[in-house]
Length: 157
Image (cartoon, rainbow, N blue to C red; front, side, top):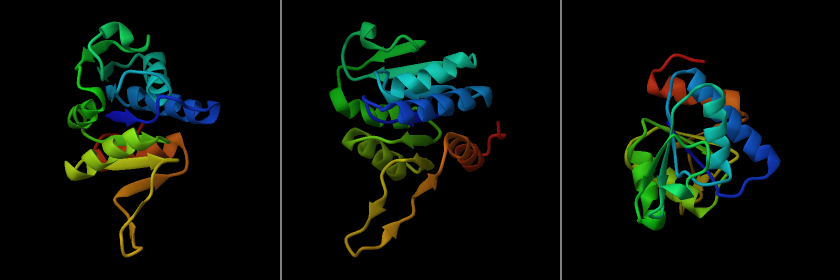
């Protein structure tokens, strides 16, 4: 499962991302992310605390740039365009907070037909003012993981 979000995260957002990572690992899912700090680091830390596997698809060329909780660091040299690889490597996407890079991952997820679950993240509004319901909104980490597992047909944690 991809966990996407900003490279900077306040304490509350980091705690939510860490819980998402932990709950995904407890459910037997590997966590794929961009491999850097903020939400990505928190999700990896949570997954590792539950014995899970973490994969970081890095924007740069150096494995050493990955956060310390990444098991498998994949340097791409692709910059932000590596966001497509993060999403393509996952069965679903959990967006936790995030900025424009996260928005691109959400868009890739939707375009590729991956379920996208959101926690304090983007809401899409079409040009005519209609809210696009493609991102499944959730209130907390437990609900986010339950939703993504249900959408992918995996057992709940």
